[in-house]
Amino acid sequence: MDSSWEASVTDSINAIYLLFSAYLVFVMQLGFAMLCAGSVRAKNAMNIMLTNVVDAVVGSLSYYLFGFAFAFGDSNPFIGASYFALKDIPSSSYDYSFFLYQWAFAIAVAGITSGSIAERTQFTAYLFFSFFLTGFVYPVVAHWLWSSNGWLSPNSTSLLFGSGAIDFAGSGVVHLVGGIAGFWGAIVEGPRVGRFDAFGNPVKMRGHNATLVVLGTLLLWFGWFGFNPGSFDKILVPYPHMVDQGNWTSVGRTAVTTTLAGSTAGIVTLFGRRLLVGHWDAMDVCNGVLGGFVAITSGCSVVEPWAAIVCGFCAAWVLIGLNILALKFKFDDPLEAAQLHGGCGAWGLIFTGLFAKEEFVLQAYNSGKTQIIRPSGLILGGGWGLFGAQIVELLSIVVWVSLTMGPLFYLLQKLGILRISSDEEVAGLDISSHGGYAYDASQEESGARFYGEYLRMQQQ
Image 1 (cartoon, rainbow, N blue to C red):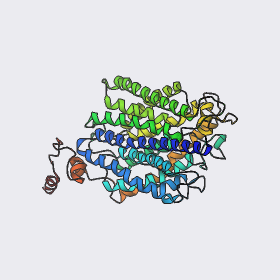
Image 2 (cartoon, helix red, strand yellow; image 1 turned 90 degrees about the vertical axis):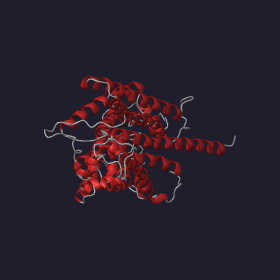
Image 3 (spheres, rainbow, N blue to C red; image 1 turned 45 degrees about the vertical axis):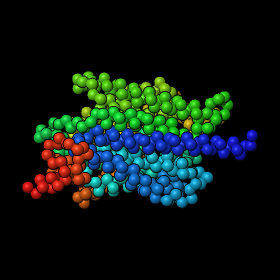
Image 4 (cartoon, rainbow, N blue to C red; image 1 turned 90 degrees about the horizontal axis):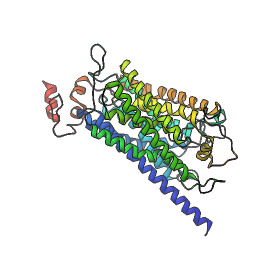
């Protein structure tokens, strides 16, 4: 059989695999939309659904024009400076399939941040921060870790601490970035009206539809099989010196570790919250499952299945603990996005530095070549190199996102285009900003069902 024909078939199958993974990751946008809609009150359902659409459409343009170039362009270890508006794509390194896959990741970041500032943010503000986050802030971090010349990249010719940081599918690059951005947005805006009473005690504001929350969680679970296993980019890569093993083996293992981490976190959250609040809460369990997925995303390809269970167990308690602290310090995040994506994402980076297995690291980053030596997890005897690189990544992301997104939210607030008025918030964003409720017969306390009624109430 002609070798060039074999190469063409291999390239075609790898492209199909990457495109299918991109489609799965995009399904996560639907999952985010359902999860967010169910987690807010009914009077804000249309608004949060629209913001999820906006995250996708605005993110598409900003990532096409600038984001992909900053993330994967050739320049320096900090930021890329080529491929603007996909100029010179396809190239010897990247093609359209790769761009689409990375775009699906980029718009997920903005969706995370939107959840933290839900129910009290002007629609215009979403346009500004979504464009800036997907077009600049996130791509710079992606360049550090996922570009071959990024200063934190495990594929760099000059490895940090002889290791580079391992963030295979983005516990830090995607989730920690989105979580920290959401944290600063929520801090600048402050809590929702009525979230805490006059004595500072929290007032429960439950989402209006548990069915949408569960549906969104399961859609996200489905999409995560593109998020984590899909990050191999290519599936037909055989490992030398290993009979019948290749990336297809690692892809299967990555799907297993992803499932185990999420499932463990879900069951621990189920019983943990039962002990704390006295009942079984479906919404808490859903967030627990997602927390496990977020945490395993960094090390999904380089850890044993048993380690994924450890990851999920700890992720559940990280989430529970951070939610308790959030209430103590009067921090209001309707989706728990900062705690879930920020906290569990940070734990995921640390976990990888503790449990990464050298054999799997070589498979993920060196196509299974055994003559290369790579640092592995600290607990598995791999020394401090990888663990140190993970800590540097964690701190660098927190500092970078804080220095960029914090001032942006502060500026939007000073310009008066970040938070809505108290009257509009009480009435609900659907009626005050979008012309009517998401549902035909809303039972909201405002009493207005249509935009005209809302305007008449405002004039009284």
